[in-house]
Length: 175
Image (cartoon, rainbow, N blue to C red; front, side, top):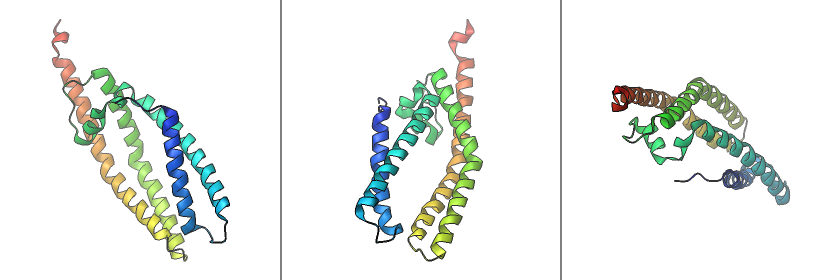
């Protein structure tokens, strides 16, 4: 699977976020705001989101390295099973990157999602019922973060251990 060009990722992110933002304005903004103002705000927020997160995703992919282009990487992270044909250098770089990322996620995820959840619940209690939907989203994200993070850390550590084992038992090391 070849990597999408960075500009196409930015465009997709901008369109999806801008469209979602436009739809969300009907629930969260006063009804007297004209449609053209809503559309302009959605275009601006979509472009800013697309550029910022597109660049951030590009940076993350560079940190993962060449293994980022392989579908097997995501499957391996989920299952904790290293493919038999895994290139040791590429996979070591990718797995080390995931370990660093998820070590930060171990404390940062709950802090961010609990903070957002508290904010959304306070807005919902203050008389804005649509914010209950956003609060539910952040509650689900909190649970997913708390469950997924230790699993990814365990799986990546096990695969790094397997890479070490393969390198030490390789016939090339017997020379």
